Amino acid sequence: MNETAPAAAEPGLHKSLRWYHGFMLALPIAAGLFISVGYVIGAIGAIPAAIIGLVLSVIALAQNTLFSEMAAMFPDKTGGVATFATEAWKRYFAPLGPLAAFGYWCGWSLVLSLVGLTIGSLIQAQWFPDATWTLFTLAGVAFGFPHVISAITIVACTVINIAGIKVAVRFNQVIGAAFIIVLAVLAVGPFVTGQWNSVNLTSHLGGDWKTFVVWLYVTAWAIYGSELCAVFAPEYRDTSRDTSRALTSIALFMVGAYTLVPIATTGQLGEGVIAEYPITYGVASVQAISGGLSGVITAILCGALFLSMISSSADAGRALYGIAAEGMSVKQLDQLNRNGVPSRALWITMAVNLVILLLVGNPVAILIASNLGYILAITLAVIGFLLLRKDRPHWPRPIRLPKIWLPVAAVVAALNTFMLVVGVSNPGLSHAGGWKEVLLGIVLLSVGVLLFVYRRLAQDRSSLTLRDRTIDAPPATEAATTVPDGTR
View 1 (tube, one colour):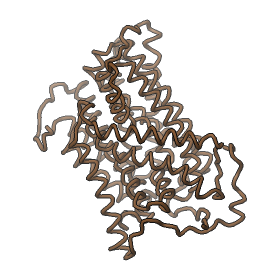
View 2: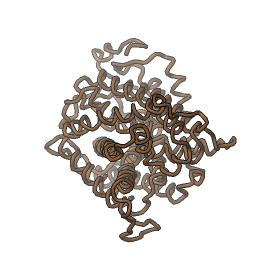
View 3: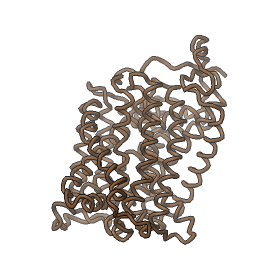
View 4: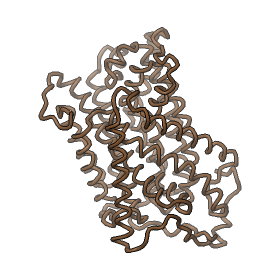
């Protein structure tokens, strides 16, 4: 079977980013500490929560290393993890491509509404504690002050992204530096001030492994999300080097943040406080250290959360654009505006989130709905690493990992599959979601498949194929550029 070397760079996407831009775009993913981790501590205790953070961070670091090789293999393609899964699986079962791609988009799209809700809750607790009114109730969701703030931030992050990726990067750099300082204070402050006590660290699991795995599933997006650096691969000046450095640096940062902050803050405040204030516990921690500054810290946390919305919107928009560019969704989404960004995909992502805000309205429940497609896409991409090594051994690989990474990929894929099956089949163990959210995730995935079928049959007027083997051989000059195993 023949293989084709990467084609010329995709027109329209501007190569203007360096690795540290990718790091800054992914940095706000650490704001997941104030979205899901507080709920985990309240539900099962600080010790299991810290273990969950460490386990997922190490897995994310391994995954990002695998993704760096695949990103360098396809420097002309946008879409990130979704593209890797599509390329790997198309000769085995082509429909998995659009399923993974749309699932990946769901994972990055739906989090806009949940992060917006978190911002709304922080603002309400700090400045508008009496704003407990409800505008209306729909599908059991009381649409109140936090939901209004969420809707405003969803629209705002979309507008910023449509203005161009450089605008989003500059915005991230300003608030990102302050956010790093806050995380450092949360991780170190309780120890330095002598307020930390190991007695406050306990476990409520009692050997309940299923609940532990469900919370792994719920929390996974917030840590696995560092892979978003890969979606900007075509926009880095040096695709191979910048992508690899961005993926590795942000994954290492997450290992420290998601391990130290839960241990430090819970040892300082106690699990009862964290359980009562699962979103605002960071503000309480810094206030206990400094004796004030709650307003400043709340503003910084809200800014960091908004940055994560900008990054998520940018990733979701490019993922949706990448789906269309690869012929897996309607042609109308394969469009860039004059700023080189997929504005139509961004507007659609915004609209879907506004609908989710109306129908779900709970942060953990939204994660249950979005994680189904996201973890599926990640798992298919990790297995894709093994398939690409098997099927395209001579494909140019500017980054070629040592052979030890083959069993590592197999173990990571098995862990993700196990987590996905247990998480989807036991949503009630999270105490915040149920089968309604799982069904919502399935419906969204089904929409992606239907759009793929419509694209092939109605727009392209071609037949649906289960296996795609139309791949040519790379030129000898390109094949010769492949470097030995272990070269990074």
